[in-house]
Image 1 (cartoon, rainbow, N blue to C red):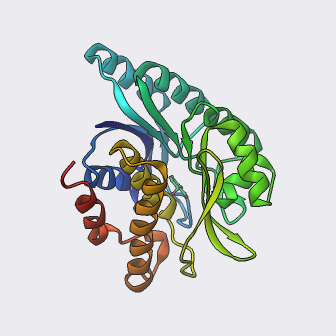
Image 2 (image 1 turned 90 degrees about the vertical axis):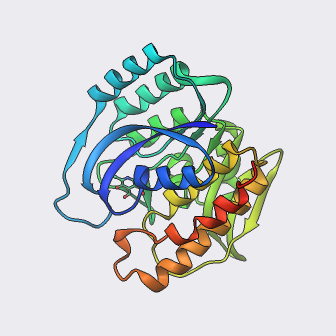
Length: 265
Ligand code: PXL
């Protein structure tokens, strides 16, 4: 399985590509990367971070790849640094996804009902158009709201399902508990254990694991359950081991959950 991860390279803070590479590799994927931006740290909680958008370089990289005839079984996109990058990822899908390949979009927009720095409503609207080209989308609760304008989870899921065949709201507080909401042939939800706190990078850990599980041939429900189990173990470890949560998740010693699931495939 050959996967292309389109995401930023945040040098410190364990998110995006620095998470996608090891997690997808643990699922047995060959991972190529298309970096969207180079940052000294991610933007969530660090002051004075550097940011270099790679719009021009992305185009040159893709032009070179075309001469190599590269094609991907799965393309997974995450943090995009500009509206023009959203447009470019649509082109990347057309140029590099195999026929019958899977396109997975994590519409990285915000958390805690706020946009991440640099994003706004216009950016969210463009991200919605990228979601409409995806097979699976992986918004968190905030992103589901920013994409649909709905705080009611059932309504938000229904609106997302009109955009894309398989939306997943990766973790949301309902009156009767904490759930992952998803749509395969019908709207469903899966209970999740909730660990109190804000775990930076958890969405990226989950998205990379889910992408690896789908690429590895698991059906959606099994892919969600295994990714959620891996993510929960990583969150439990992070709660104990990491004092400053902006430095990201200690998921490394839980990668065996994924490697053992894919050992024989
Ligand atoms: O984890 C999402 C993410 C990815 N990339 C960058 C970010 C964030 C969230 O803050 O800042 C650069």
